[in-house]
Image 1 (tube, rainbow, N blue to C red):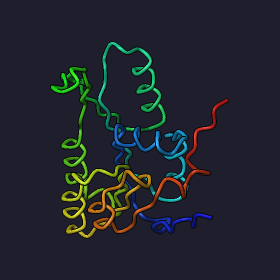
Image 2 (image 1 turned 90 degrees about the vertical axis):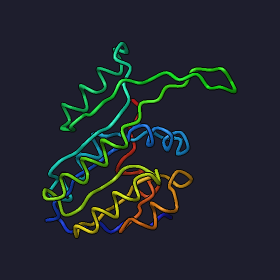
Image 3 (image 1 turned 120 degrees about the vertical axis):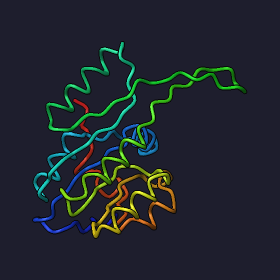
Image 4 (image 1 turned 120 degrees about the horizontal axis):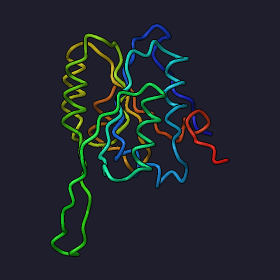
Length: 177
C-alpha cells in the first residue's frame, strides 16, 4: 500500500504551478487521468490556497481545447497558454507540436514568492530545479508532484517533498461516467 504524504499545515499559504504537458505524459504512464477540479478542491480544503496557475500549449482552432481551458478558468485556475509551434522532425519527417511554457512558469513561481509559503509544482522536468532552489532561498517550501518514471532525480532531490501521483489516486483521479 502506498503511504499518504504529509502536507504543510492547514494555515500554509499555497500556490499551485501545473505544467500541463508534463502531466499529460505522466497520466499516460499512470493509466488514469487527473481531475484538475479535484486537485484544486483538495488544496482549497487542506491549505490556504492563494493561487493556482495552469500552463499549456494551445491550438487556437481546437474548439474542444478552448472549452477545456474555459472550464479550468471557471474552476479558479489562472490559465496561461502559448500557441503550439509545429516543428518537422529531421529524422522521421513527422510534425511535432511544441508549446513549452517552462519560462513563464518559472517566472511566475519566482515573482510571486511574497504571496505564498509553499509552492506546489506539478511537473517532473529537471529544468525547474533552478527555480525550486531560488524559491527555497527565499525561505519557501516546494512540493513536487509527478509520477514515477517521469520525475527527474535532480528535481526530486531539490524539492522539500516529492509526492508521486500514485499516492494521491483516490483524491485526484477523474472518474469517467
